[in-house]
Image (tube, rainbow, N blue to C red):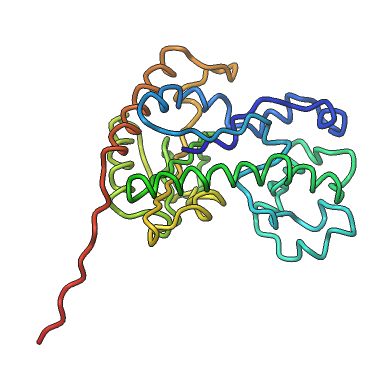
Length: 268
């Protein structure tokens, strides 16, 4: 499984380059969601987790995901087609937040971008790929659960009211057998669950989920209010309950085998 946004290490050079304080940078984190996966290893999972903060590098974005306006002029030609998230400053290097403005004193330059990619982003993707390939060789298939947390979905946005969102990029990154199981398991928490709305799955599941190669990937977003207190610190009782639920999900998923759909025979 993958936990790309729960890192809490901020190198001194990152803090000195920021034009905002650490509390603002921490808003990028999927706060404490790694604690939800506390029992995942005991349940049979291999966990790839980012220890460095998301402000350093976002491992759930592709290397080309940046807005030209957020980088030094020499880099702008390679980021010519930014999407909505990149334009909002949520690229492979986060550069701005709502109600906060620019995060960095200067645009991201070539050396800064290369350091982030070589030291953090690429090793994370390599580790995930290697673990998935090893599982696929050993078991004949591999399952990737990419774990995230989210703020409450605001009114007027797709998925409003959902407390858990299961994403498979609209059926592309995982077999329906796995997605149906995860949705059903999420329903055990007795909270509203949606599929792909508003989070269909980011770079990690889109890159590593290859059902045609028997590698299935789903993204799970969990509303932070299910396990955090108002001060944004973990609520021990609710967190323990959620961790127990997640460990059971992982254990049961590990016992599953892909459902092979046999196409109907043509009429003779």
